[in-house]
Image (cartoon, rainbow, N blue to C red; front, side):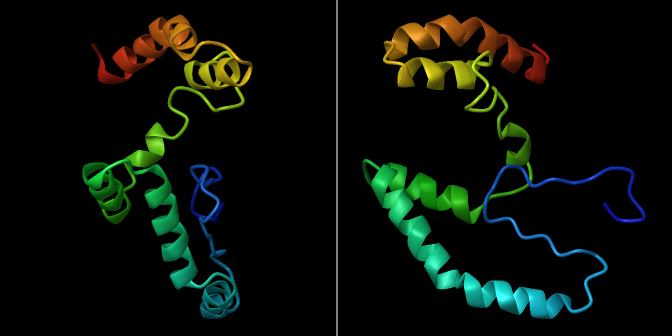
Length: 126
């Protein structure tokens, strides 16, 4: 929190978000340190590996590539929109916990579908 804001700002749940304090004595040095410890080439290689592991065909590969190339702040709202993975009373967390517990995915999803749809409807003002 800086001296000109009213509240703290937190990363939207990403491990690779870097924040430099406004009053840092040598901000460029902090950037250089981050670039040394976490080379950008390693990041791109890891992202490519992650995409290849998840893309089932050329189209899904291209969608992943586009999503990472065109990311914007709008996505921050959707992070944990249906609940965090550890919140078992929310649609997302409940589905994750149910499947990890050995439940049938379709049954578990159907159990949380009304709650999830209500959250989507509220957001879209439907």
